[in-house]
Length: 507
Image 1 (cartoon, one colour):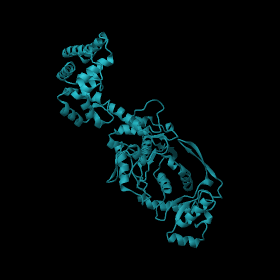
Image 2 (cartoon, helix red, strand yellow):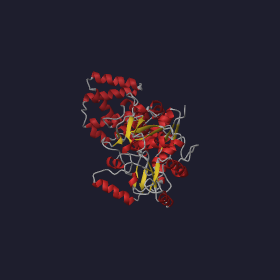
Image 3 (tube, one colour):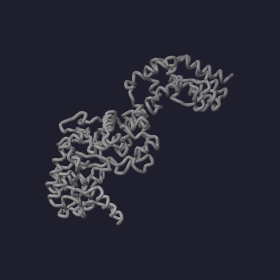
């Protein structure tokens, strides 16, 4: 069976949007599930809009996400070069074949003449199209004599167009199978004659794309639905060269948070949400932070992106990259657009932080905890502290701040919260009993059981009793699991805090 080879082929005219990143991810997942290859090809045929920083942003985004290509301009294989600008000589040879087999032709129309024809169509209430119905009325190699054609070609005053439909053809429509959208029927008579080669010696995207996919032996083309209008042309180019076609799949759009319209850079600005995997510096005054800079775990980001428009067929949502490779099935991709939900992205990050193993919590973080909180907690309780705190943070960078909030005791905060609690003599005596149990160095589970039993005997509501104890230990009415916190803070600190609290209450 031929090797599965899938590619991600971005145009480096701007930063890598999360829609493009999702396309790269899906290609990566499919190729890896089939033990195939994932290829990065830079489609820089539009040299006027080429941005070197954009190419760097694309590669560094893939690198951060952990979906590195097997072949790319940065790690070339035997199918290179992997930048279209470096493949220039290849395309001329193939476009000449299309001229020879009469499926393409030279066009010499000026911009002014085409603009005039377009305006005339608009005045008639028609849509301008350059195709089989009117191509011979324009200035091209189909309407001019051989000498004139030669003159214009030698003067480099031409583009090359593809014949979308020929009156002599027996086939006026084609049917193409899309792995996501099913069978697509296309009326060739409604297609225009697209430009496939420019007079600067560079092909347009359409021609270069097909030639490169063929020469690189791409087995599956998985790309965004914005390329659906080009599918007929690409299909016909394969036929014109008599080449085997890859399978095609067109992904749904990622929609704005409102669910209406395609997500754009402006939406990032409007809603204050990231739309790039990593930071993009537009200029010295405009910087867009990506998911990385905001503090997302790369695994959580990949998990989130994978689920925009795809699901595994059950209720499971949390996956690492290897699990996504195993679970991914292109048939589970939806046809309609999928809404971008940043709150859901943060939820994924919370769930991934919970799953970080102790060994993957950096040594620096552990050292910072010991340095800043050694007077409050036992040194052997750092792991326990991290366990209860990281369930409450959205980003790993917030762990130290959350630890500080959990361990601090602020008298002013205590006084403010005391007024919100019905603190009577019954609760006062309950807390004195708690200290008696606590001083006996019983296990935390035993202490908790005693406290629960005493609340029941004294007919104190669990909520009131727990809030009173938390208030006396932390000055707060809510926070991390209370008895886990008690087990982490040093014994003398717990006793001192409760005594000080009761003194403030009873004075």
